[in-house]
Length: 220
Length: 220
Image (tube, rainbow over the protein chains, first blue to last red):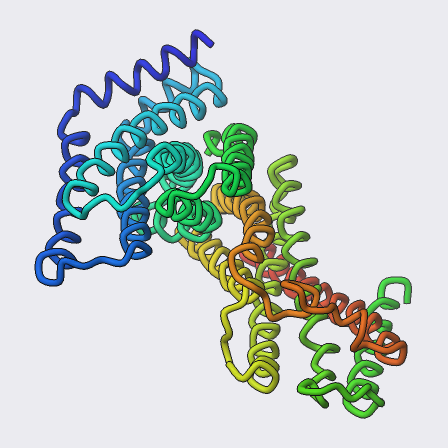
């Protein structure tokens, strides 16, 4: 537990020291939203709710891929070797996942506010939509952290990251879009229990697998 | 004879399947008509593919446990032949779809699931080709194999809830077993499943032996 706390603290301090990366991610989300605003809203001023929703999730997906890719590459190999002598592999992967969850939550909430400002806000059940965002942030960061670990061992990290993660993130994305569509339509909570449970299940599977598989990953 | 009996069995079963499948009597169903014979080829190819995928993941786990390079060779070749079977099943299915549902590629959860499965295994091979070192390649691809397989299962489970399936046995359609297949067809169908699966294992075992010979030659 102490180890976990120290490792998360290290991740946060690392991020804070290189604030350009964090600011870069924020700007990335803002400019993507602005591009969507220019292409959808400026001329026609009309966007279908389904397009609105899907677009938001695609923006979040790309932001997540971009921000998590660096979680294993921003430190030099020598320094990582040093961590490996100090901490347990489970501690390292859990700390990275937790840190990425926090980062992604912050990014996606900011993103949601900006997106709603620019593109209008057709969501009826905000609480349920936010639940979707939280579940999505957890799932995205767990999957992508593990894939980032795999991809960071290869040369062409950024291409591999997209190629490896998109097919395995698809079930989660489909469920998230469905859940958030329910939230947009303002349906009752009871209609979406199914989706929420499935998402919780997928998140659980992904985190458990990362926990089990990471010790094999870091030896290479 | 000890080791070849199953190959003989495979040839006999497939000959039986092809002869009985193309020339045997089948019940006449509306819409399906003679295309019902495809059930001897299309469905067993899927069964074979799932078996091979599972075998590939199983050898991935085995590799992570002992680190023997042979297990990795097994894993790769099973995945290779699984892709081959997947493409064959895709083609027979598409042909069948055109003549029964009137579309080469209808929107159907099973088709989407298999497309995602093929994407996953194609990216598995991209991942493999980006490493030089044998052990590292084997370890990382085994990790990805397990990770991807475990997220693929929820997809198969989720998709039918999103769109209705045209396949028999889903979305309110009656299963083949109930109405369409009579006992005469069953006498061909089950041997066909065993025969095609054995053929898949046979092809993989030949490729595995080839790969092992190549490795031994390059080591000398």
